[in-house]
Image: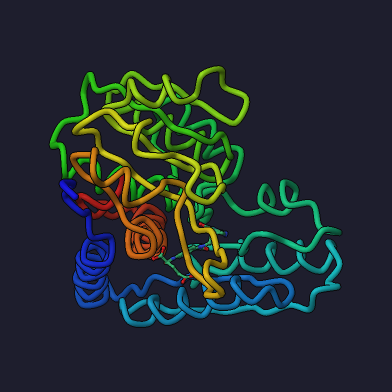
Length: 296
Ligand SMILES: Nc1nc2c(c(=O)[nH]1)N[C@@H](CN(C=O)c1ccc(C(=O)N[C@@H](CCC(=O)O)C(=O)O)cc1)CN2
């Protein structure tokens, strides 16, 4: 194996430490404590773990955490009423509705009811438009985390060929916008792309975000390329449960110049960037300078 392993856990710990340092200063110098409200509807076990982890990390960074757990059969009207209350609460600087939502709820409607300035997930249509037009926005946490790791590894991304495999609103599309913003030549590929292997082989930066276990083998990777694996797939192999990404780790690591593992790569950066976004939202709400190196 020749690739440098990009340690997302370590990187995320550094981001969280920077956030905590900035939060401590905000409290001391301005008397302000950033607050994050997380809304969970239903009892999806993975979502419960993520929400618990978000609450714990928020408090560890010195911020206020407000958790709202609603029954799986909560009506859209009740959920929208809660969001309206949070939108108008000055102690809440960030609002996040954990996804996926139960099927009877319209995710787009719910997300677009969040005040864009408090939309720390960066999923509101206003933030999507701002990011797409290169304006200051809230940036989705997972792609922001990928960008931070890529900038750290490469320095400048200018002129590099980037291929994003996956076109989701949460990862694929914003990731492509961020890479374009850093002057990469960007291709968005997906399951219907013709000769996907050949497209991937062109990439200096290959971001895999398709949600298919180990779909990308090593012979799709250009030697020396940076592989960012966003996939989190739970599979069973040899009777054992295992977490794997969207790339075949061993064969890709043998060819790549750098690679993120699963677990311990992109995943931990998602929550670290959520804290960074909450801090950014709080600074913007109070007309204060934004934390350096924690935004796109
Ligand atoms: N409103 C949102 N919903 C969801 C988001 C999001 O960004 N906003 N992303 C995912 C889930 N997610 C956070 O919410 C998340 C996923 C994975 C991790 C993580 O640290 N993964 C670990 C592995 C953990 C495990 O064993 O399961 C890793 O990759 O090392 C953090 C957050 C969907 N919903």
